[in-house]
Image 1 (tube, rainbow, N blue to C red):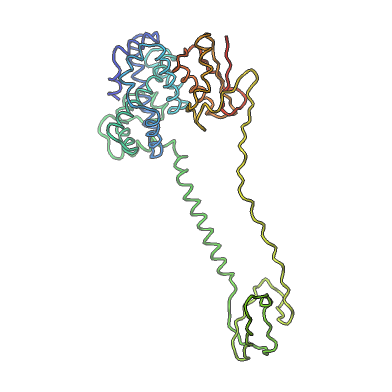
Image 2 (cartoon, helix red, strand yellow; image 1 turned 30 degrees about the horizontal axis):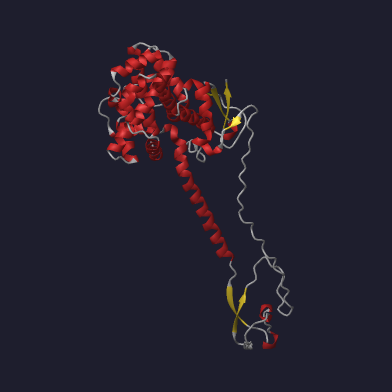
Length: 406
C-alpha cells in the first residue's frame, strides 16, 4: 500500500487537484483513501482459492503490467486521458466493489473534505494504480494464484489499519490491531473476511451431498434386486419321461443340424425355478405356453440441437451495431472495421453518437457499449461526442443500438 501511494508524485496530485477543482491537501487525502479502500476490496475479493485464480486471470487478461505507475503523472496533466482512465477505473471498481462503491465514495468525501463527485473520480483513478502494482509484483516474482492470495493476505493488517472504521464497516472488513497478531487472530480475520461467502461454500459442499445421496440410492436398489432374484432349488422329478415337454423357445428354426435331447430319468434331478409370490395361479406344465409378443422399445430421439435464433427488436429510430464487431459472449472488439463508418462523420462533422445498451441482450450489452466508446476514442473521436444512454427496451445480436445526432 505504501509503495503504491509513493508512486504518485506531488506533481500528479497537483494536476488532479486542478482537474477536480479541489485543494491539494483534500485531493491527496482522498486519493490515499481511494487507494487503501480499493486495495482492501481486492484483498477481500481474493479471499478464496477460486477468487484468487479469478484475480490472477484479471491481471493477465486486463494488461495490468504496472506501466500506469510510470505514466500516471503524464495522464493526470491531460484532461482527456484523465477522463479515459477514470472510465476504465469505474468499470474496475464496479466489478470489485459492486453496489458499495457509491456509499464508500461518499464516506471518502466526508473524511477528505471534498465533493462526492471528486471522491468518485479519485476512487476510480485508484483502481488502475492498484491493479497495475499488484500485476507487476505478481509477474516480477513469478507468483502463482495461491502465492498472490497469501501476499495480499499479509497486507491485510496494514490496509485495514489505514482505513477509518466507517469505510471498514461499509466494506465488511474487520478492524485489525497493528501489533503482532496470533494464529487465532489470523483465523478470526479469515473467518470475518469470508463470512459473506457462505453461499460459495455451500456450492462446494452440495455436489458431495448429492453424490452421497445418489450412492445410497444405488446401494438400496442393488440390495432390493438381490432379494427379489428368483431362487433355484433342486427337486426330484415326479413326472414320467413321456410327460416332459420341451420349452417353447426350442422350436425356433436353427441353421445347423439338431440333436435330440434325451429325456431325464425319473430318478434324475432337475432344476425347477420357483414361482414369484405375485403369481397366484399354479403353473400347468401340460398346457401350451402362450408367449406374449414383446413390444419393441421405442428408441429415444437423438438430441437435436435447437436452432439458434437471433431475434432483433431494435427500437425504432435506432440502428443495431453488427454482432461481428464483438467476440462471442464477450465485449472484446474483434471486428472494428464494422464500425469504421461511424468515425468519419464524428471526426469531420463534429456530430454526437448516442449508444444505447438493450436490456433484452443481458449485462454484456452495457460492457459492449463502453467497449465501442473506448474504440472510438482510440481512433481520434472526442469523448464529448460519445454518449452512453441508459439501457433501453429491445434486443439484437450485439446488444447495442445507436443514433447520430447533429
